[in-house]
Image (cartoon, rainbow, N blue to C red; front, side, top):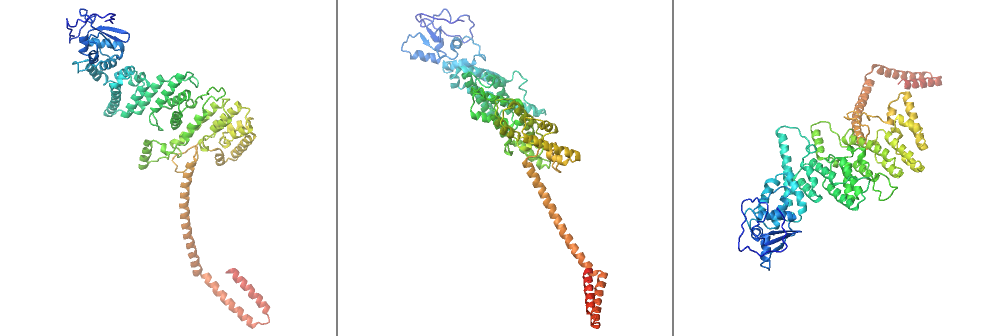
Length: 624
């Protein structure tokens, strides 16, 4: 099989002898047939093919039209430089015109299908033409298989725009999406039929998983495939794994915090922004690992990505911040040529933590809300979103430890300003930290690395530490720490003295008041204890206790009113019915009559009788 170049055309002898290609496959070593002289030369790129007009025009409508439209009736040379696939593909198509059997495979189906369209080798000019042959191969072998479709789609990248014009690209993409969803549905039905417990898709184990093949595609085709499978309803965890696999192959690992090559930087920026736009829906239980989100954010900063892309990633990380580790939030800063810039992007971390702290009940997943309502209807114990022992409350404790570790790491950066470090220290609310030993350790490291801080900055930074939440070991260390301001040292000594006094007096409640209990306040009927109570929790607890107290006071008032009535009634009955009381009253009346009698009989002793009467009156009043 060779490429024949003809420098000088021979006279056409097609009228002397006709040539009919055999319908059966020819297995010959040279073509065209040597006993028939060539009457047409086809130029494709830098190659020339000496062929015959009749077999070509019998199959190719384009060659027939070019010959018919030519003003020269004896034309012997045509230029077909636009044939998809170049000389090699045209050679295959020319063999087909001569009836030579050609092999259609994954590697050439796309170019042969495009070449058949370009040369107009369809059923209008010949039955079972190249176009119908390639279409049959596509329907039987390519479209039903996801890996085969991805391979052919990869070859279509070099056949733009003709592969788009014949709708080959869209057909393959839709085929991939349909087959992927069918595979997902079949797997789910199989598990239900056999009562298998749901298991994650084992995409990482299978080395021939079709999702890995998508890394072969360019960014445009990859985006179109992902958009199609998302529209068809492919599971989000599968989409996440596809994105992770593609990013590992498409994104260059960032060394440092910048990308020096401008072209590479632009390519990285477009790639990472496209991947971010394809991420599944944001949620607190997202299928996208936070480590992957962190790597995307680092790549975005290094490539100079858009602000909207950064904000999207920061919000996604903030939603899952309780699942992060220290490495995930150590985000290098883009120095922009500044040698004195900090090592880490603390502003981004501030936004991430603020995003997490500003979450409210609207950010809870719908399934979590349904589960809570269902449990509540069944009468079981449920937690509000920010109640003691609730998921968010435990998440805040995790996040507080994460921030303390982050502070200890960035405190070693000598270029980090005290104002930014103080802003980081003040991020969490007071109830977030049960014990502040981690914060104290980070502040002490920062003071050691930054010995030239102003006294005002030092004092403001140390004010972020609550001495009441330091353990005894931390208090002992702080009392001897010369880097701390005098005010804080005095405060530490004061609380340490209270601790010692309470220990000597055996008072445990006051100690818990100052230093906090590890398990939190023991509330009757709360259902769960928490080491740190938020203002919302305190407010709900106070309202509940107030309602109980109001009911108790109302009951006591009613009881007291009844007791007062009973007391008055009993007193009246006692006064009316007691016999000693009646005897005393009769005795008093008789005594008064005797006094009057003595006053008339003994007029000379008036003063004496007056004094006796006065004495008797006083006595009567005193007794009664």
